[in-house]
Length: 435
Image (tube, rainbow, N blue to C red; front, side):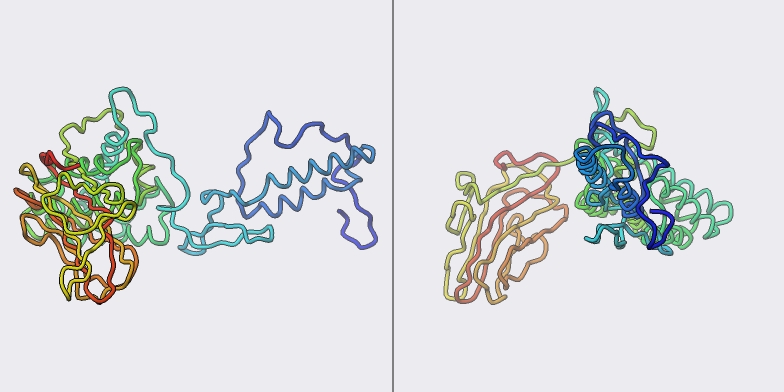
């Protein structure tokens, strides 16, 4: 309402009152408008001008109708559904996102573009004869090798930190602004290259083991991607864990082992799930073969739905539908114990075991949960004490020839627990009696 004075009456937005539109604001055909979330409160305020009677050339009934439509229009510019990427601002090196503050405005809070917001999967409909996870893996592997080769080339010329950092920043900026934590990761990669030096970098990433290394990176990316080529934080952690297991089987030099693990870990950390999803189609690869990748096998014993008694070699515990195996009293100091053991059926390799169990009544902490392979402890034990859902997970490649088992033993008066699930991951031939 202009001019701004307490003596002036409301003046419409147009020189003369106009005839109201006859359609609803959201009625087709429509147009899509992208605008910063920070501007939405101001747009809503400007649209409120259309509520004025002096704006419209209509009668009382028409005025009520158009005012209702204006309120609908204002609601369309609400900030409830703002996506992260629509409302980013930068306060120094820190990215922030706008969220509704409940009063029609926006409050900015720290944001990490690697994990927040939505990046569509790279291959929701892969070409005929291709798989989305393999294509995503091949594209990311190409980009990974490209940024690594570029760093080596810079090292060979001058090895200046600034030049190395520029190369990494240019690469990462294809996905997101390199600020905040991303800038720290970029600096870590550049500093790591300088620390290693051109000789170790070259031998690690362009030497006799490099082809096998890049093939393994591609295979791990393929095995832990979803069918559409997308990644989760859990998938990234699995890639890092299993790559660390693979490295000593191929690289023998300690400096090269440390460098190749550090380099991939920082590369994955710099992108996160969103970055990998974005880069999954940016390498220019539209055809790739991952048939040689051994993604292994997984057996899940869901004890909440079955006791799997028919395949067990030995069981100690009482099966309760919906709960799993309940611990039973064995002696005065073992008040709640579950043992589930089965024959392996055939030679294979175990890469990971995970026990999921629930403590209902607290135990005294002197009992433990553990996985076993061929009668020997596989991975660390976990003390059983407080109530709640627990997970004991261990990742390590180990041969298995006879049997696998779990032993979950809680001590203390009144201790009560249930073993709910047991997950085994391996490579090679899956034992025939494993689910």
